[in-house]
Image (cartoon, rainbow, N blue to C red):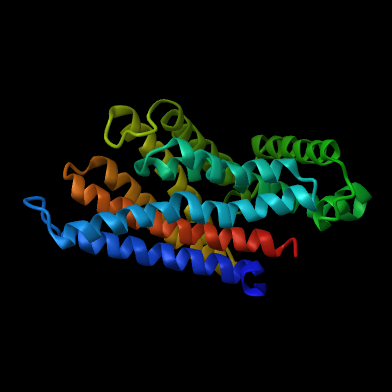
Length: 279
């Protein structure tokens, strides 16, 4: 029971099972035939459904949901909780094709959030409210924490507009995150089940381009976890582009499995880091 409560063990287990299911789904899918029912076709469907059950429900609830629960319970951090609840809730309203748009909507807000927290951390010695916000003591009320967050966000945006942010450390995320959000929202609002419509292709390309741009920043980061996230997310983003442009449905499905496996692994690493910071 104690192992399940450990963020590293839980997220590694979920992302590992998720990855195996997507691998099995891909292998059986690509080797199956559409000409007549076979046992391989049956297992291809079983693994396909099972893999996306993990990607759309089990992994988001376990990984994102756990961080959101802690943000509400012990930190009074409504902003963080909102960002982390986007995937568990958003997955209910999209098809398998567009799970990347749901994750993108969360990521596009999560990265600026982490940047704001880092800035508050640098000022934690200036006030008790900022210290409470960082230490997760829950001593601030929701209104105080939201005010702290948005005041610091406005300060960060002002620094960006005046060229005061280092590009690779922070400036790049002030560009790529709006790109991700601008690409994800139209799909979530108007093309939740579309794979290769003009809307899903154009907005998906914008969402993935923004993701790859941000991944360059992660690849240059000193933290090994962020480097790993950068590699996994870059391959996933390229797969997300490919799934919308290939004509063969079976090949498109294979790219969807690859992207979903890598995306869940990347966000599990990220959320494990977020959760461990509050322990």
